[in-house]
Length: 188
Image (tube, rainbow, N blue to C red):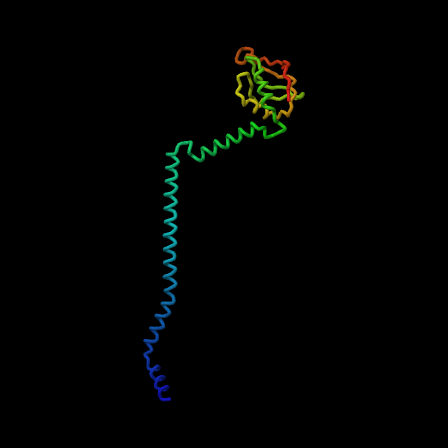
């Protein structure tokens, strides 16, 4: 019993200043530790963002330099554009719209039978008149000229009634437009 009283007495004899300083230190430590951790996290976040922007800028710069040094044949954008152009040309060749598809052989025969110095500006098929969108065709037109005709929404299996032509284009009578029957049979 005396031991208990003595211990209690000794505890009570501790100076008040010592007890207060210890509790203040503990309270300050409890406040400072999260602040310090938060500060270091903010610093690390800022450093990581700065490093990210720096590296991405460097990568972009290197990519731009590579693109400038790269020949067009290896440039992805140029290759993609050429691929798209080829796909569009292929779709035209295959006559993707069946309602306006005209057989290539038929049109090649038509092109080869156009008289010299004759430019076709419009034609009449199945009783309907079609203009060639401001373009004209001649015996020297490139093989892809059928694209212009197919763009004019000519139906499949056309019956060519007549062609309106302009003869001797570029001369004084280039404005003379007249009709003529084009003897052309569509064979399937």
